[in-house]
Amino acid sequence: MKIALLGYGKMGRYIEQLATQAGHQVVLRVDEHNRDRTGVSDLEAADVAIEFSRPDAAVNNIELALAAGVPIVVGTTGWLDALPAVRLRVEQAGGALFYASNFSIGVNLFFSAARDLARKLAHEGYTARIEETHHTEKLDAPSGTALTLQQKIGGAFPKAAIPIESFREPDVPGTHRLIFQSAVDTIELTHTARSREGFARGALAAAAWLVGKQGTFTMSDLLQSE
Image (cartoon, rainbow, N blue to C red):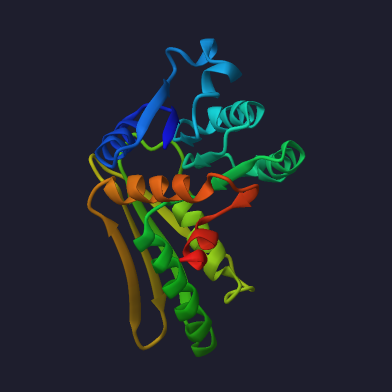
């Protein structure tokens, strides 16, 4: 698999390391130093693009991949206000987009467990809140993962917004805690990432799955196909 990396920070380098170990080839690396000089023709050698950049660059990177006819996996968060327009653009271009707030398989199973637990506990008088902690370099707060978690369990608590508290500490890949409280007890569900490896492996799995498809997809599509 020939990969274009749109965004070459810590995640991009981690993905390149794992991709190379798996026998894939990185044919393009784009960061802030060469983004303005990167055009459609530069992506045409790639089978797929993987995008981990900045919220203000994500939509432009998606547009670039669609114009090149290259499917794109997007791990950047903080841009989803533009998702309706991007979905339409993907459809018009006959392209392929895979986006997720978190590519960790463990986190996505965490989402499923949280949704099931919320459905049961909401009827028992519990309230819910979310805490998330990430490294100090993370640009968006709350994190995309926390917002996805809020959305996943929100249907069980339609009368109250589920609060999110965000913390930023050095060298924390990502920790998310879902706390259910009642008058008699507290139940907590926690996911703690030990490194970026889970995110990188998930992104590579999504990239391999996306090649040859058309449409807009998320982690639930990938997990349901397994």
